[in-house]
Length: 134
Image (cartoon, rainbow, N blue to C red; front, side, top):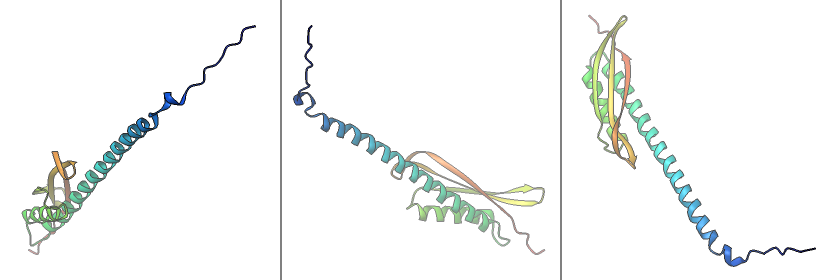
């Protein structure tokens, strides 16, 4: 009968593995956190643009103001809320069966690294134009 001896792994073989694991897991967690931060920032910019475009459409739909006034208001609101980020606004009156609708479109850079971005994000809002007293 032959007995086989099991070799017991020495502690020297595991030396330094905790440091490597910490670095790998730490890097993965930092990348995950950065991705979540960027997603939250992009959604924040989108929501600011949507809110500003909606407000601008309502302003442009007032009886005594033009759609261009609404685009200017929307651009000013978005620029102020986003810390001076370059926002481009446009507006137009769209004829529909029930009357005219003011459409305000805002475009801004997509934030990729902080508030600096590549590409652009565009949102559109609508409001029914008030009928003036004639």
